[in-house]
Length: 177
Image 1 (spheres, rainbow, N blue to C red):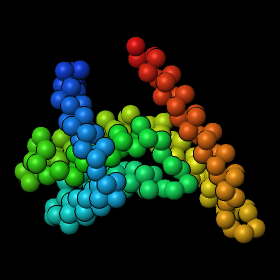
Image 2 (cartoon, rainbow, N blue to C red; image 1 turned 135 degrees about the horizontal axis):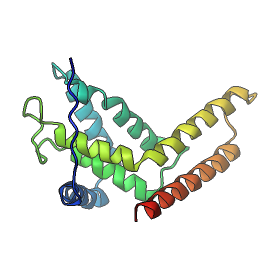
Image 3 (cartoon, rainbow, N blue to C red; image 1 turned 90 degrees about the vertical axis):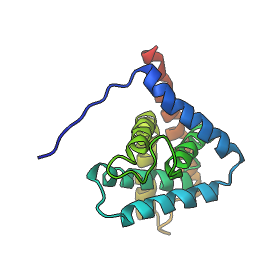
């Protein structure tokens, strides 16, 4: 029988995590993006190799891998602000000596997962737009005679979806104020 634990974070509580991401974001600005991606892929591989792997960690790894795919997708071209936020989270996630050191059994990844959950919440509209883009690209490739989606159609759809993503994020922020 599983147990559900709910935590309510105050703005002050979230401030600790925002500070950690700000520090990681400063690192991102001077870092090589490919090295960050390699490091987070290495961290994921290390986590998967560890036994036993807690379910609450295993359940989020596919989400992380999708975020990496989105970051590396040359057709999608994630905007700079979202790119930096994603890379900063990856820098934090890849650091084994963060708020809760990763080598502490059972809870070492708890802080990392909280940040991933916050990122997933913040990236809801980004992830939806990217999923729509991938579906569009797959359908265009299936229906195009050359089996490749025409670049112009992809570019147009990417711009539309990223504009939608920004509108939805802005609308959500205005409702929270």
